[in-house]
Amino acid sequence: VKVTYIEHDGKEHEIDGDDGLTVMEVAVKNSVPGIDADCGGACACATCHVYVDPSFSEKVGAPNDMEDSMLDFASDRRENSRLSCQIKLDAELEGLVVRLPKFQG
Ligand code: FES
Image (cartoon, rainbow, N blue to C red):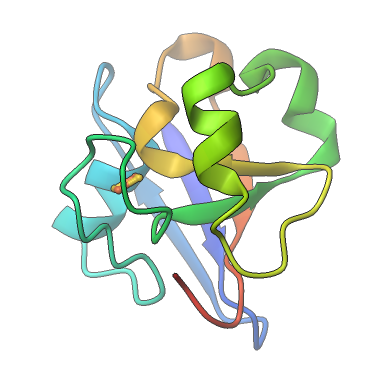
């Protein structure tokens, strides 16, 4: 599943991530800067915050309650904010584009 990560300064990283991995895991494995993921994917740190490209918001869906309250701790939360450890890749998300915030946590 191809995922493009765009850093806050516009630098793009296009990565082929395995089905079933999360958007956070693929970023960390491939050393994409800007995703800290301090809690390791437990939905408890908000340092894996990303902005989902509007063309994918529907497919990615809305955060659940736990993620929603965690997102309040993310810096500069926006309408398309998600925690990348809570987005699992599957064929539906082929070509996903996410943008990274300037600061995490
Ligand atoms: Fe901590 Fe996603 S890695 S909330």
